[in-house]
Length: 94
Image: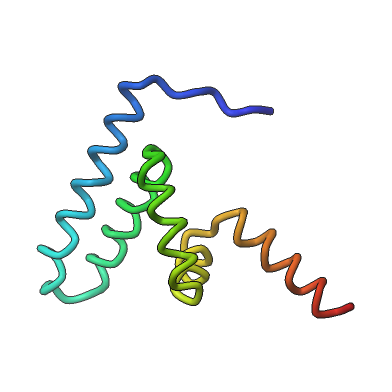
């Protein structure tokens, strides 16, 4: 079943919320605990889901730094990363 397309207002709201989370994350960094990490990751996910330009820049950064990109894919549980890992594991088995 295909996902319902979101309205432009909902996309913009999520994009702005993601940016706010990413801006607030460094402010909360001095506090004890990993709150800043989770805030930044949540903001990054919202921005990547709603901005084509951000997805392109993220893909370029992952190509430039593949180890960090793989770590971020795993942390965000991206389906493309899971498919890629299964494909790479099948190649090794051959």
